[in-house]
Length: 378
Image 1 (cartoon, rainbow, N blue to C red):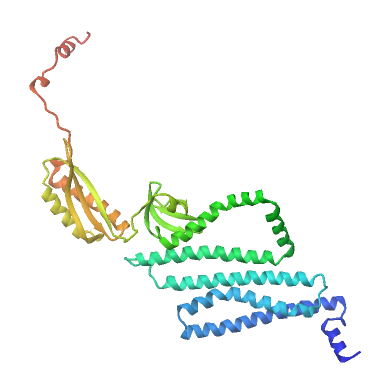
Image 2: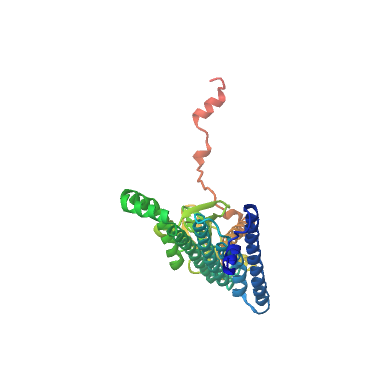
């Protein structure tokens, strides 16, 4: 036997018994996994040190997001290298290789999603959503998040498609179904229509942005904020902390109110119904004083106008500006409270009341009433 033949027998574990071969195979697999782990640890330790000293937000986000999918890729590549040397049975080797290929497809799909999320982190980090004027930040945040979710769905679909195409039996079944089951295809298309329409609505929302995260909206008669924009639905946080879940297509097909579409500034109003005897200039002066003491007022817009009259009262409308919807609501409540206190204190007779004219005949009792008082037993 030549040296080459002896090496081939040794490399195929032919000299060992079945029990020894199983132990050696297990040891080789464990060694491959350990070496992959060490290589992954060394690579990311070096990258982490470089990022901490010289890198920016982009590099830090990439290292953090890619750490886990990279570990899976390192491990699968190491296993793919040692599997042929283990000399598995010919019937099992294709199964193992196909399984490793499927796992590699999954790991690369995971890697693509992680890269996308890293870029999302970088873009979002440049804008502060907690700032007072956060319109641009909310616009970018909404666009990036919606596109991220849509692209995630696309990557998952592509990954699953590549995995199915790698399986000849499944691919054959799929071709047969599409070729012979036309009715089933129509039914599947109808069933998938809501999902596809919501995905397209998500793309349209990301590009045109009729709504953004933290926008103040009125949907189905409910006042609240846009809390989440998911792949197929939107969560509206109502003022009393209830959540209204609405499909994405609702904001494309149905009219709704968006109070912060262009900017966050809002005009608040408070209405008062008082007697004709009230002094409107004095109430206007008091409104100005109240607004100057209110931290929610933006210092730009205010006014008091007589907007309506009736036979009993006049309608006063107090107008005030605020930086956002939350301040506008608090300011309206504050102005109502203070102006009511002012009217009660300075013009108590000017509060709404019901007038009646009483004539002298109305003060005289009727004959029937007199008769009943004189004869109690009647």
